[in-house]
Image 1 (cartoon, rainbow, N blue to C red):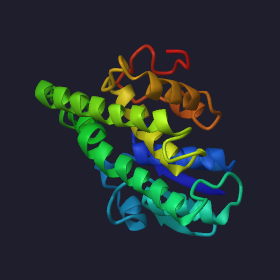
Image 2: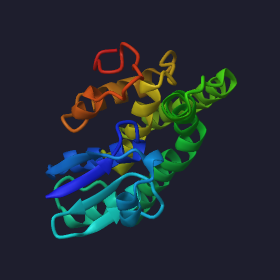
Image 3: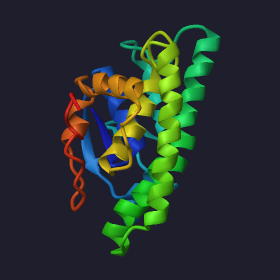
Length: 222
């Protein structure tokens, strides 16, 4: 049995949970606030970041890329990085785009302003930082619109790790009121489809204490 250490608004934990759900891998959840800096958690991952997975035999894996690729390589069901070498490279490019660029531009500042400041520092958010994050979110959604106009899925003809990475980041940004869906019909349709998947439903039902998502957050038809 695998045990996943995460917190509800960690987009990288969400990506791992989506993969585990798509592959029907059983796991339990343990809440781990990275700002708590627990010694036991730091022993598993000295970087102090979620997610971390551990099994009953003591195997410990950290970092969402390492975790997701481990399970994709060891569990045959629903492979998420497959196809030709060129296709696999495109999947990894898109994963990096969302894990790094989207996170840095959009998710990280939203988490800092609307979660960390509120729960840890008891400070109000910076309106200027929020406006900039939402502006950059709009640019990223423009690019996703373009991809979906030319492909069935984010990276190509089949659902892949790129879709999991994108959906994980967007879901956290949406929870934090950072997404304006107006004018993004293609991305909205893709995301609505993703919301309906059994792997995604448990994520949408979770809540972070003291932070309320928008009314449309859990709705498939939004």
